[in-house]
Length: 253
Picture 1 (cartoon, rainbow, N blue to C red):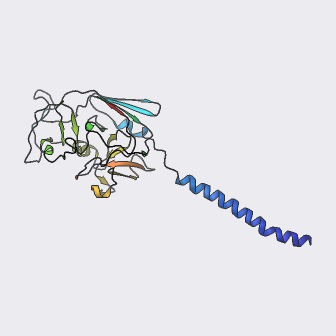
Picture 2: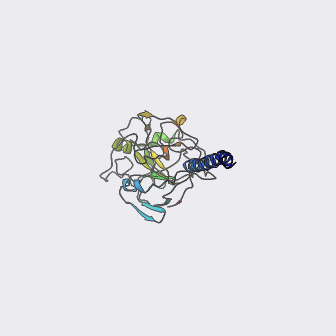
């Protein structure tokens, strides 16, 4: 009888061990399924430009920029060393009546971006900052107005100033992609997620390759473990789609 009792206990022990192992495996799977805790601190050193500075305070970074492009433009005053007449490829180019002037734009952006519960539309005006301190604007010339006509006033580096003399990029900043590469890090949107050039893994992307916010999750040279990131593309909406993927920080000017 004693041996029989031992034999009866063996299946019970096996079941207990199996359940314990299954529980541990499930816990591991759940841990692996948790969202990545993104941290963008590693790319801050890439920011460098005239009148551009940043300071880290806890889990945020504050950028202050004079918004002065470090490249030539016909929108600089003619006595500025960076003045250069238009020499781009747009046969319909026409200069708008504005000039580049020093600004004071301040972004306070999280270092730990994550997807927003409620996605916010991008505003008119600055929505992010490029690595040379020039601000990004969204895909509109005005409230729900496409860039169709405004594109003809973009300089040879695809930027131009507003009526308040604030220079900005709506499209791919070709000076930066020419300097750093078409797959390079170009800047941040106000939600903390990075913006990259149009090329990824040797392929030029279009908006059809991206989600509704004009980005996706993937590995980049700066984030080998992967991160959500935006891409500039040659087709509308160019930099951002249906709003910020994350929660935007504060922008003042």
